[in-house]
Amino acid sequence: MIKTEVNGALLAYDETGTGTPVLLLHAGIADRRMWRAQVPALAARHRVIAPDLRGYGDSELPPAPFAHHEDVVALLDALGIDRAALVGCSFGGKIAVDTALAHPERVSALALFGAAVSGNEWSEETEQLWETLVGEVDPEDFAASAAGEVRFWVVGPARRPEDVDPELIRFAEEMDQRALAAELALSAVEVDELDPPAIDRLGELRMPVLVGAGAADVPDISRLADRIAAEAPGAVRLPDVPDAAHLLPLERPEPVNAALLGFLP
Image 1: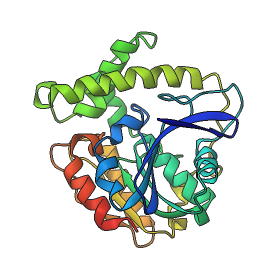
Image 2 (image 1 turned 45 degrees about the horizontal axis):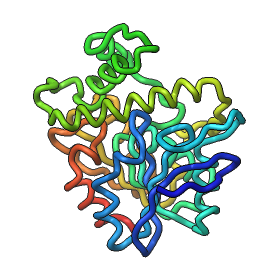
Image 3 (image 1 turned 90 degrees about the vertical axis):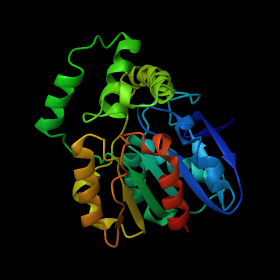
């Protein structure tokens, strides 16, 4: 682990490999460790950087306003990188898209897995799925909250917990407990969002874009992947990966790594 100052905060990251730079942006229920299978696979051809977003994992959270997408650009500056490919999962995908819209000259390519998009609203179906699968959880009980979020996102609505690798569930719950603590701390800090948001600006994404999702994820995620692929010029939509949910790169690294190695510049 390395730390560097980014916009007044110390961000933690792992770096390995040489070649064209690739930045891996983790999900909001995880931290940089979710990319443990991608880092060695990509490092043979690329300079791979996997940061913890501000407030998450080993990164700091000073009590000052900031924007995640501006942190991405400042991290590139700190590392002497003019342009990088951004790979994002879930919340990390949202940040990757926001960065590409705010600073298109800094982004050589986008690869998005189960990505969220700023300005997108979840459907009533998703809200009802949450009520059915998780229901009311004490937000101060991080263990119970993490178990609920992992049931919803990592197991997914179409699978049972016993259908999923128990080590994946354990690791996801451990990461998510730390992420929930980060989100609680972030709620006390002013986090600036992209304005206008990305959902109605996907046509501005002029760099190569790769979009994928897990077949067992919440249906809204696959629909959102379809929308990104339809509206971003020249985007490539991967088939949904069978027996995989929201943390697709962690759960099914082989097809994700193969797709990335075939796509990244």
